[in-house]
Image 1: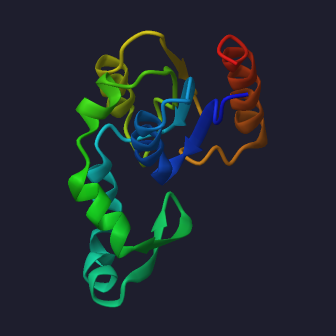
Image 2: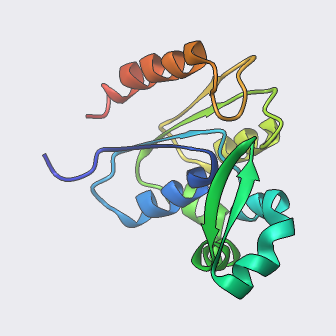
Image 3: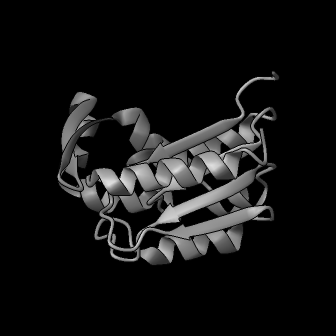
Length: 154
């Protein structure tokens, strides 16, 4: 095997994994769940904590009802991100999972990512799922679909 074959991420990591996959030539397949089309989208959810993060280097924020520790480097990376160039230059298959009822990252983000990406690319709607896939049946569905999809690339 020649290194990482698949990266699948959720929530705040969707944009980060797309950036990482673009820098790793061994990546052949990437999947995101509820990813923003622009990393700076996350700032909307952590705006109240940005000053604390800058001042102390880290803060706990709540995104989608769950706590996350966010550091200064994360903020810096958001500002430096150029998502369209990254996604359009991705040399890997892309599978985008997104719920049309996602209240954290709207479905328009999935449409933008899909438009940015080259083929092979796929989109799966997670109708009725929340952003964090907190219902076990939603998480299992994503796992089953992902396993079937990635089999084509690994």
